[in-house]
Length: 220
Image 1 (tube, helix red, strand yellow):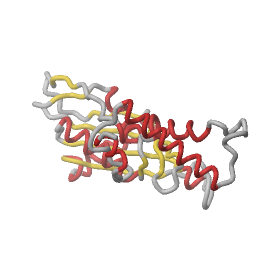
Image 2 (cartoon, one colour):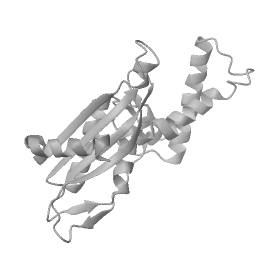
Image 3 (cartoon, one colour):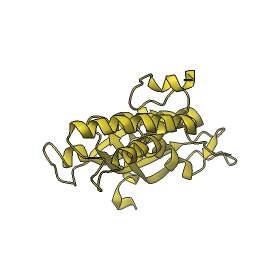
């Protein structure tokens, strides 16, 4: 077994990327191993995954879903971000959203569903990000086991590091199915809202108010 394959077994924090992206063959190895473990879980739970037509292939389906979809952001590099010259030296605020958030709670492995808004104060001498790339960055960091507070920070810091704007803000509002489908079984209207403010946003209340006003449904 190659050294690269052995590295698959080195644990890392749930919402961290692996030190190196996985190749297609390494993902296949992970799916095969995860399928075996999922079959063991089904056996413990007394669920027939061999003869029941409903669950016959479920362990492999779940393993493939986890590796190639739910947790894909851990195993692949961040999306390449297209940038453009800030030719006219634009320094006004840019707000984009709502951007779909589909993530998974690290505590109970239940979905987190919501939306994100991102605010940017570009630098006159800097660059502008291609608009669709914000969606891709949000999706990338959402595809791993998360808590919403850290997801908000990861998105903000990644974009800040990539583009070095004067300031950057992220707002996420989401429903957590670990609260609505278990435990207290809260209403589906119950949401959690988190903010991340970097650069000039972090010390200018007026900028923060302007950003949050653009996140309101009334502003749409």
